Image (cartoon, rainbow, N blue to C red; front, side):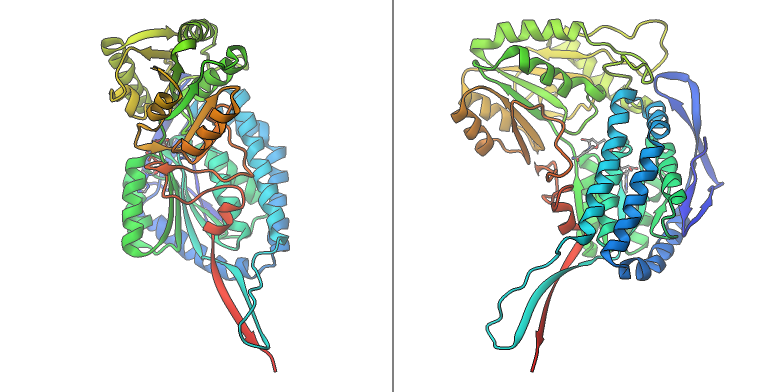
Length: 478
Ligand code: NAD
């Protein structure tokens, strides 16, 4: 398959630069070719999105909702095909990828329903015969910049609320998920989305990022990706007074107290740490265990790790697949080597069976390092997690908060007081008890504190605040 741009309702293939897409499960297989845009395509996309904005923003909410219901139906009918391609392109196990595509379908339906919800408030006036009220209005053209690790759900959780609020979109997906992006937009185009409402521009952030952020004038930018890129984008947007949200990295802790039910807790810890090969912003990358349960918990954890299956992404029995790309492999392996050199290895999962030539990394649990060690502090974004021992609840909370990130945190306990204290004291945007760190539902706000986020929220009703501006209206009647 070839990537293509979709701008102003027309498909076309940039011709100046191209690169092969390698299947991370089998690096000898080419999945397709990426055709990379230059700044002229970004400029065309802005013109198309501006042109479409007038008619799209003037549609009633009900009419925009009908389009979103249409996109949801179209995606559901093509869900197997989209999941298969995404799984081949970035290595997420097919069972997980199917779930992700269905999450996209549900997000489209959820935001379609927002088309008929009240979107303002009547505010009593201090003067007689004055009706004063607020209404949310669209922003204009929104730039959406997405990572590769949720190649379907993240774009849709940005695009769907942006569209229902009346905005038009320029979408730049990550390089390692651009075939999936092309297929997704093909599905949307076939479903009859009007020209210019979504404009897809495929390219490298390093090559067209400046055009998106400096050469055109977006009305808002919604970015998900690394903290380093997000911080740069935030600075540029702040300088130009462009509304922005940046959802970034995490170093999420799962705290296991002495009274936790090990049997019920373990599957959530293992899943949080290793599903998607640890490539979730909300992955469990630190496990903090209270002393009284440390030995029994770590023994059970080692056994569980020895039983999980690393396999090609299309194998329906794969618990985790390869990491997404050669660069991911290099980065994560540098931490694996650091763990073998500087830490104690508590457990290592089995290698992929057979003669696999993919970016496979065996799940790894390291321990015996201090709380300031790079393995404890830096986002690894791979199937590597660390275990720290805490003397009591207060020590566990202190360790949990000892990070520059603040995305997600979980506590495993049966003690109601500790549960409430954790929900109050853990410095993270998503705090959970007896739940894994990943897996927040789409109807709830999603986002982080500290360096994980620009402090806005995505998904749920919170997204509608980002994609609109509030107008205060007042009318006197005689
Ligand atoms: P990344 O920052 O390298 O890239 C993200 C996107 O930004 C890509 O589309 C990329 O092309 C683009 N980009 C890169 N440089 C740019 C520039 N100068 N200007 C404009 N765009 C640019 O991140 P990644 O490797 O794709 O994703 C992994 C990261 O994403 C991890 O840090 C992970 O924690 C984070 N993430 C966060 C969340 C969240 O909601 N907090 C969710 C998923 C992933």
